[in-house]
Image (cartoon, rainbow, N blue to C red; front, side):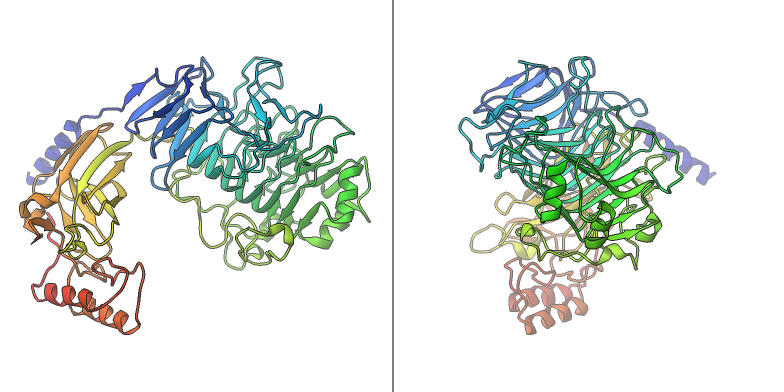
Length: 637
């Protein structure tokens, strides 16, 4: 009977948790013209309608974790004009998300417009002008990108840890007026673009029109058209990119991995600056798992190089395309022969028809021999030994996806070279392709955007002090530090519902933790820090409001912690310091680790630096020795 009562009580508690959603704002980004500073609120969900322009002199700040839904009917689009600034600085734990307004299961390619960033770096055009209208809007309607005057070190701001899901709608209904997931026109070198994922785009995932912005850690997932499209004099450096195609999703204009042009004034398109991007460490997955895979016939090449472009591709994987590379035009072929165009130290595998071909020119002695001379080729994709690169039907759930990581013994784990002068400034790694032994897509990326639950960002301000960090002279922390807080159910077995990490301010002792997945309710806060005893909030749990702001202060009383498991220092209650090995007990083992690091003159960010002053010394071991004499250990519900 007691067991039955427990089950009933648990059910009552679960159903008594009120589920709310974040406030939805449909006015801030409603065909807006931003000419000053506008800062969004991450606990608000925004519905973006129509064309929203950040004008010259305007600045749009998007906090980490913010969710912006693109309106389907009005084709919601965000445009950063020349001289405008976007500061979208997400984080690994809390990326900024632009996505469809539709519910899970109904989201589809082209549900909203996209994001367009325009700058003043040099471009070229078929007319010879140094500025042009960005594509997608129709003649005379598009915003301008490029020079007048040319500013090659122009900055359009920061775009980091951002996901763009289901963009790429046709804006005018006329063929060719689709916009891309992330469009970059004349973007300058001081702009920061990294950790960006574009999923299920209705046109190209990423397209660069001129400019010289450098980008890292990009993901193009199941775009309708090309993954990496370069035009009109783009000459940036791109490192670490993953593109994945769906064998059934392809564009009428033909779908490629790379499509790299100069401008469309063929054959007289050698005006400068010439399109010359440098790519390294790209994993470019085509649709052919094996050569007999049934694939949409509109899929074509891993790379289509044409219109007198001068791109170079190094240390990359190009796998499973109808043809690996097409050299198109006498200019491209001649530049390949002279060494201006280079494809070096790449792996090509699993091509349905050919490793390479040519049209309109001659690669010496022939395209296949050229690829084989400078690169590694395999008949089968399995020879590359990636973990599970075609396990994408249906989309893999969650954010912890290792499908494109090299397995042990993979030829992709070695063979990269950065000796080439073109690779100056690139990060030197041993592996080829986007990944080595570390998966940079973990946590922030999402590979099941059709069906996942879009997070509702909620702020929880937590005030907490690691005891030894508190400086008795200044009354502040020796340094701020990162702490992780878990929200746990307030009834047995106290399951984790959500977690977040934040930086504790050294003056206010407070960090703002962003929880994305917890419903409104009452939870225990479990605090973990690198060298303190794990500390839980007081008995009964604390109120939390989804989509809102909650607060809890551990420092006002010992009883704010479960079991009053805190120590008083300078009138503030603090977590016990000294649990260096994080076994939830301060003892001789912690002292031994600290002593050893003192002997080795250890400095920097290490667990044995108990007081956070970046050096392991007698002050640290003194704290450990003192607290170990009190037999301090964790106290949990």
